[in-house]
Image (tube, rainbow, N blue to C red; front, top):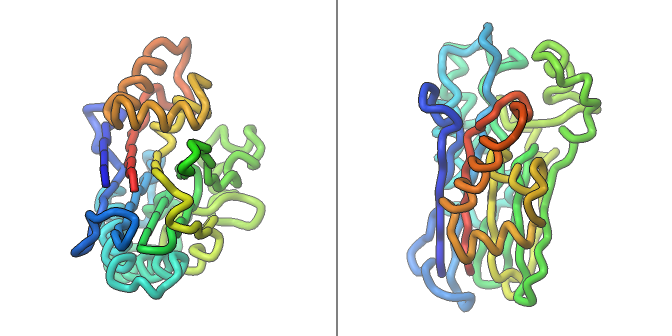
Length: 263
């Protein structure tokens, strides 16, 4: 098994709001005949410079949500990943319910990718605009996407106030914030273990190499990860951002995180 994990802040003057971790339980470094593990990648949602109802930072939130996801995914293998996410959201909300207004639309929140594999199955969960890639033994690459943010009219995302109306709302898009019921909105699925050769989870700061700049296909992206590594993919993104004529998606550089695993 090979694991490659890399993250880079979008700007040196602000903290990296992404969060990623890999857990390989005892015996988990083995091959397909029994090896198990979990990958979690979060992209914290940067709030506008105004009231959020919370005294905590986005990195505080993603660290606690991510830690709960890793622990519950590994310790409760019988739980579906949507239930794991619901439990992790509830735990995190309880950690700051006494000090913060969790009903605020801009309370700390994050996109989520969770992948859990065992001897027989590979389970996945995607919430919001991070990307999961699954590669078959034949080299076919499938992108697992939650495209609800892409379906929101572009003009509705031109201001923070307008975006708020679509955030965690019917007809809009959903992120992991303080409401455990949002876990039921995630894109989930399961594949036979022997049908997945490798996988990659990318925050949108890394996936823009494909979905924004069009520098290659998802299969090309996975090929870069296998041959050159996660650091190299992020470096390619930064090169594209620097050569771009104008800032993209409101930020010239975004936090970028990649987790790549060959099973």
